[in-house]
Structure formats: C-alpha cells, structure tokens
Length: 306
Image (tube, rainbow, N blue to C red; front, top):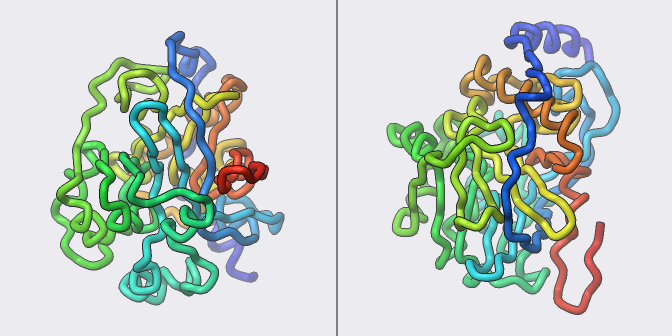
C-alpha cells in the first residue's frame, strides 16, 4: 500500500472540478411515458473504495458490471449497456495483461444472454440496444442480440472510426463490426433538458432521453429513464462510483478518460444535479449499490429483488 500516496498525488494533477449553481440543473417540465426497468448483474464483488475514486479510503466499493433492461410498451425490450458477451474470455485475452490485472479473469463473469435467460428474457426479443459509450465492457454483447437496432451518438462513432486494433483506447472494434448491419447513428439535435446542453428523445415519448456527458469518451451519453416510481439517470463511466459524484472527484485511474478538462465539467454538473434533483436517482455504471436500487430482472411469477 506504499504506492497509495504516490497514486493520489498523480491524480491530483487532474483538472479541478467546479460545481455549477443550482440554476444550471433546474428541472425541465415535460411529459414522459413511464416504463418498467430492471437490472441484469453480470459480475459483482467488493473492492476498496480507492480503486474507484480518488479518495484515500479503504471503505468497500460494491463493484459491478451490469446491463439494464427496459420494457417499453410499444418499442419492446431495450437493453442499456449490453456488457459482457459470450466472447468474454477471448475479449480479456485480447485486452491484454494490464486489463486482466484490473478486471480479473473470466471467472465470475456471466455473459448477458445467460443472465437474461435466467431472468426469462430472450436475446432475440431485444429490439433496441443503447450504450453510454463504446468501451468493450459496455458493448461486448452487441453481437449476441441479433434483432436489436443499435443506437449510438454520431460523435462516439466518429471517434471510433480510425480504430482498427483488437483493443484501441478501450474499444474492441469487433464488437461494433458484429453489429454493423443494425447500427444507427443519432445526433443530439433535441433541446436542452434538465441542465444538459442538448438531448435526443429515443422514442419520441420522453420515456428514454439521451443527453451528452462528454469527457470519459467524446460521445459519452447519459440516459434519463422515466420509471414507474421515479426517474433514473444512467451515467456510464463519467464516474465509476456514486462517491465520485458526491465528493465530487475523478477516478484514481484517470488514464482511462479521454478528455479530463471536459470530464471535470461533466462531473461538476452531475454533482449539482445530485445535490439539487432528489426526484432523479443517478446510477453510475459500476456502482453495485446504486444499480441494486433497481428491481432485479426475474422470471415471471418470481418476486423482484432489491
């Protein structure tokens, strides 16, 4: 643990996070269709907090890899962040020893389709796949969803376009290639909403609205989802933990982030949002405790778990 002060000192070089005033995140009054949603955990275990946020703390971090299933009344089954695919073992090999040091081996990791099957959901029934960004652990299962239309921001796809290697800037190009025939680019051409600069209403009914949160990657996206009980904001890897928003703070491992100054602005806005919008629950992609606030996807007839 002697390396901890040095690592935290290195992270101190990250740009300062400035939190905007409450007025910057005021609610945009709008109608929205309610949808059912549930979480599909594919990996979950405990790590020390400092692994996930630049804070000298050995308190536990409930680390998770998960996807979110949304049951839309007319659009059908939607998956947000289709994480581990059937190729997870091979993906880890291609990513190399440094990634395996961070992520571990295939052991304990379940492909999305297997978890869906356990929950009584069929991969062939998925009509849409959305991703907060294109890193390998957020789109690894795209090729396992044969009928899904894949919607990604044009800015994220433009960033991906020169990548050709098996692991480039955290992106595995074969994941997008497997879904190429079903790939659709969108632009944030909708109005500002809830303090975010622009928006894209996925189904035109306010149920799932994409908003830009750049920094971790150029096209990183958050999704506002109107659930039956409350609204959720899925923020991908802007921070790995809820603690990163609460402090606010960068990750300890900032090398995974593309544009730190832009990310600092995004984290500051999420902090203001978290403090002033109790009507919305923020869900970072790798915070198991936050994800567990959603019902867990279950076979019909079985009670949901929290």
